[in-house]
Figure 1 (cartoon, one colour):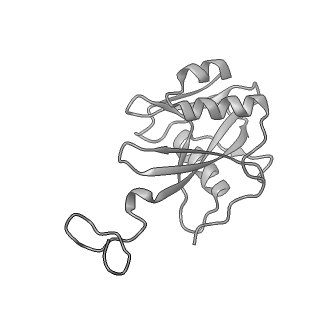
Figure 2 (tube, rainbow, N blue to C red; figure 1 turned 135 degrees about the vertical axis):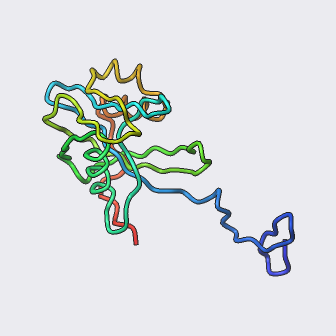
Length: 163
């Protein structure tokens, strides 16, 4: 520790108490069901199957970001019937960033995604049981199970837009 109480790095430099690895990057996404009850999943170029999600841009709230990401990544116009209900997952991405994703349950009239991004070469609306086998990450499977069971949301008010 330095004399003023700040942690020091190995080079003796003073460091902030909040190191970069402690920062959490906020994001938002949608778990999208169509009229038949099928759920939208996307295959990333790295082979992982996921729900559409992404960063919250300046001036957006989490729901606006989630709706935008669903449309950008899957070409699907989705709607959220209860904007006050959201679920949260956290994870560390391959770059080591801690991420906290706010999820919304959405519906869409689409039967198939219209994939436009090179990052997502494949996707489909599949039955929930199939989605549970396709989804790569435990957090996504747990989220889908929570939604299918009708578990209470983690939050009951929409998050504010970032400053």
